[in-house]
Picture 1: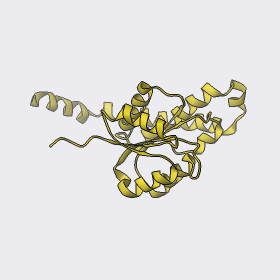
Picture 2: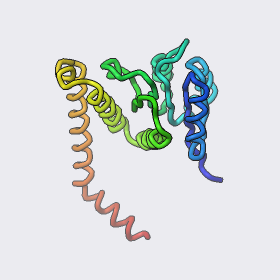
Picture 3: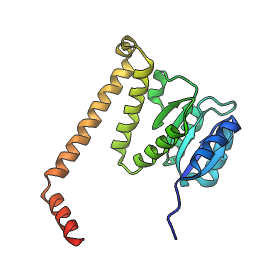
Picture 4: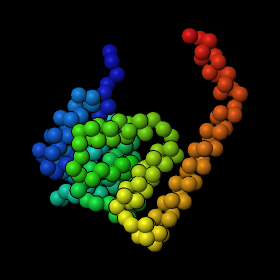
Amino acid sequence: MSEQRPLVLVVEDEPDLADLYAAWLDDEYRVRTAYGGNEALDVLDEVGDDVDAMLLDRRMPGLSGDEVLDTVTERGIDCRVAMVTAVEPDFDILEMGFDDYLVKPVTSETLGDTVDTLLTRGDYDAGVQDLFSLTSKKAMLEAEKSPSELADNEEYQELTARIDELRDDVDRSLEAVTEDDDFDELFREFDSDE
């Protein structure tokens, strides 16, 4: 029996758009759709930790995407989240716990690539996941804000410093692994087993 395909939850209050995203993804993934924030929580009550990735609209009537994201975090649901929204990013995104941020409209290729990236990130340890998430936020802000706005924003400066710290941590970890003789021996043994 083959391994089950990853489950992607599409949360979008415009049913036609949610169904379109699902159609774009259903060849490669199991896809569930929720047409609003409350329905998303119902799906999460049902499948919970089986969700591997979530595409989440930010502005929805009733329960917003921000509130759904807060609930996912509070419940400790371990899934990667991309905001897919018409809301232009602002400095408030720095405090949000998503992994990627896409501004509508998006193409099928962009959506598919984003889900692939989210799922790949899920295989990394928490430090690397944080680095990817923060780097994504930084890139989004740099695309939307002027250099002077960025320079004047304390949260952006803290973000940049945190990214530098995480990169240093990852670099030190990689150096430690590559300097380890056992690492080289592991690969020699692996090659000789084939």
